[in-house]
Length: 75
Image (cartoon, rainbow, N blue to C red; front, side, top):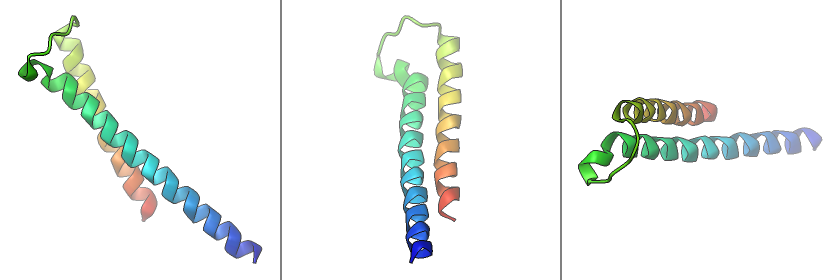
């Protein structure tokens, strides 16, 4: 019985961590998309456009990595 409980607990932990990775990945993708597209929505930010573009690209890449990591944990 302890082996079955430990296995179930391990699988639940992996599942919850992958859900966390998916959620954080989507949030990072949204943040990156915002920083890449804020000019199209007529939003005024007092930041350097080069830095917002660099941060937007980095956030999109990191979000994609988090989603991939969540996917990889399920398989």
